[in-house]
Image (cartoon, rainbow, N blue to C red):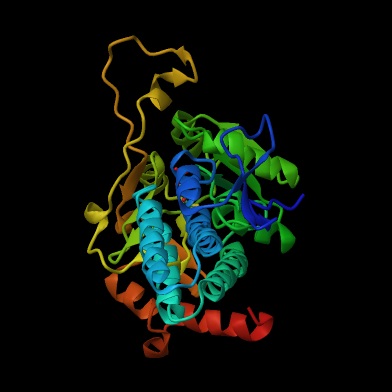
Length: 373
Ligand code: MRU
């Protein structure tokens, strides 16, 4: 089954409601920037690249909505522009950590600036085309990362992942789970160990569901079992996704990832991060500058109306943590594998022409040549 996390239908954006998976599979429809922002905030859609794609559609939907209500008269142009700016603002406030959200908005803002002089309808159509392109590009990028990542996994590897960095977290295929899909496609018999990922259970609900759908062997564990499994030699590699990588290679990802990275180092297990370039934030010096979302205490207190925590206890719910670059064996990007990431290697990644002689980047060029990706 092909998972279409986001799709365009009847002039609306439809997104799988990830809050109710796997018990129910349902699409919800969105027709404005504000409604998409609410979909992101409430976790109907989640996962860094998927949030970026959703935000791009949010901008296009706002342009379509405004163009259908406003005529082209002079004063109306100001209202259109003000409405668009408000749309960008509400989307930018939906979630703070995944940089793909801001990357997507920046790209849409650039496109909007370049067509601002045209009719409202033409602007809206151009923005919609750009959102479609961002979606298609995301799948191509995941495929490219998958091919590079698959080479790092041995046949028979037992690979741990944390949270959900799959088709549901992207426009399709996935980053970390894309690596697994590509490995299987290449004929490798890998098996996946999925951390359940407290408190929102993206591992138990989403990663397990995706792997089961595709008959990729998957074993679910609670987050506190990873150390035991590693100490027993039952995990060969870790592959996770990321929400933001700082310019020095520090990696923000779902809360609990740092713990896994420390354990992996203790047990000499490679720790890989699948990371499209849109997730690398060259504007911040280190992971200390990454804004960490603090979510509702209710997620920790219990489930829906049932509270298992003692009433009156104080609760923390940071949703992400930062793994220092020194614990990262390699970043898997669409441009190749960056081992032991640091500032110089990441800078080079964004300026490929200056990196002739860098082995991993030459690999990428070979790959492009072969597959036309
Ligand atoms: O809070 P979430 O579910 O949006 O967090 C998602 C993650 O942490 C993912 O691992 C990350 O976004 C990478 S998704 C390809």
